[in-house]
Structures are given as structure tokens and as C-alpha cells.
Length: 370
Image (cartoon, rainbow, N blue to C red; front, side, top):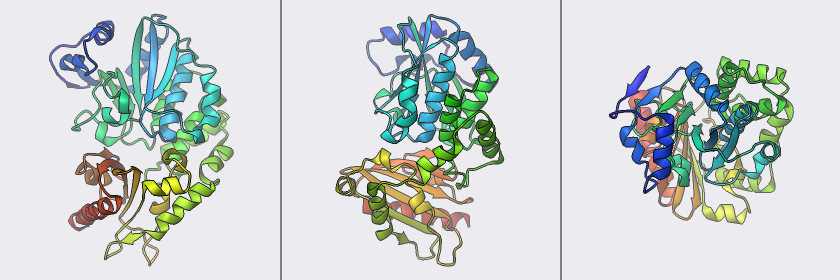
């Protein structure tokens, strides 16, 4: 067990009351926080005890601009806790994107927020507090994640008393699946569908370099639990709207290669979103548009970059890489983070200029590590 000591630790009820009565929302309780990386079995035991205590309710948070893994992990865990009789609410910086509502609308009819006296807050698939957007200062009790930049030793990780971060996991959904099984929660078809959606979207339909044998084993097990593996895969990877196709064309028209073809990049602008009448969440796993581009000899480039201008002057950078080129290290220089082979950051500026700078950093990483 690893501890990051910051004076004394408060009990669950003391911390909850302290937050509730604090004069501001800037997490003053963090000054007395002791962070613990716990085995998943201990996390399961604590959650079981609290789910069976009617005084406690749960709020499960997903990161801003949520992807399938964030939504799938949050709702699968919520349904699992609800099946134990707990009051649970799923919360995000913005509403669930339309492309995931085919599952979440039915789940919301089951979940019950209740009127509990004390709340436990759980963040899933969220590497930093800033990724919670307007909820960045709520004070998270449990972190369940798979980003290497969210390990307790990493600068800028999300603080919480209880945390389980498994960077080897290809998706947070795989962690939630293991957690629910340890808790002996029956994996219903509905829970299996959420978990499979989270898994399949985070490994890009088993095409990303993060895919592991454990990912395939989890997918097979979820299929046996009733997950609709065919239609979920087709919904996210074989159906494209005119808006999505239009945005892909913009990416292809602006493709840029480094001199040695080891770095490939492109960008889209806020005007592109308006022109094609599409929002960023509706793009889904859009990084694949660039990530699939190979070098002229059909070998794989060592780094791919996509810059999306979400609103004028505000851009989201996504980087995928092939080791030893490290995407997390590249994005760390930009104030971001993620996984060794897939990471991101947010920057202000012109998307074309930002692409040029990120590609320069990628090229530097290539030179230093190849």
C-alpha cells in the first residue's frame, strides 16, 4: 500500500460533513488528506459496506466531453450499486452525448438519487480534477481509473482518500467489471452492454495498440453475460452521419507529414463544426481518422496528432504513439496527460499553429527515442 501523507486523515463522515459545511468549494479538506492506493478487493469491501448503509448515497462523476469508456464505466458502476439498494446519481460536466443515450436513458429510469444524509463521490476514467470541469472542486472520495498520469506518484493526479489506478488496463470499463465481480454483483445484460461499450470504444474496436489479451477475455465474458456485441460495435464504428463524413474530409484535406513521415497530423476548426452542423461529442472516436494514416510504404508512423478547436481559440490535442515514442510524455509537456500510447491536452491558440508545435514536440520525441 502506498500512502501520500498530508497530516492526519478524517473519517468518511467527518470529511463529508466538513465539505458540506465548508465556507467555499475549494476543497479545504485536501489539506488533511491521506491518499491510499488500495487493492481492488479493499475498494470493493468499502463500497459494499457503504452501499448497504442507507445513510450513504453515491455520486459517480465522468469527465468532460465524455467518451464511451467514461459513460459506460459510470453507468455500469451506478447500476451495480443500485442493484445493492443504494441511491446513485451519475453526474458530468455536460449532459450525456446523444450517441450514448440509446443506453443511458433506460438506465436513468432505474437509478434513484434519493435523499441520503451523506454522499460518497466516485470519479471514473478521469485523470485529473480539471477534467471534471465545473465539478473539479467537489472533493472525490474514490478514484477508479486506468491513466498512467493518474497514479499517486504522478504530478497533477486527482487527489482522493481511496484510489485504484491500473495503467495496464486498456479501459476503465475492465476495472469496473472486475470490481463488480469482486462485489458479487450479478452482471445483467444492461450492465454488460455498458461495460462492453466502454471497452470497445476505448480500444477502438480492438484496433488500438492498448488492446490486451485481458481486453479480449473481458469482451468474451461480457458477450456470455448477454452484451449486444454486434450492434454496439456497429453503432460506434460502422455508422456515420453526413456531419461525421464532412469532418473526416476536413481532416484528410489538412493532413501534414513530418519530413521523415514519422509524425502525421491534422486539425479541425470551430467553423468546421458549425458548417457541418455537428458537435464534438457526436464525432465519437474521431482520433481514428488520423490514427489510421500510414506512411507511404504502409508502415506505421510513430506519432499521430489531431487538434480540434472546440470553440474559437480553445483546442483539444490528441496524440497517439508507438513506443518507444511516448504520448503521455509529449502531452505532459503541454500540461496534459493520459496513457503511454494515447494522451491529450488542452491549449489556447490557433489550431494550425498548435498542430505545428505539437508535431515539433513529437518529432523531438522521435529523435530522442528511436
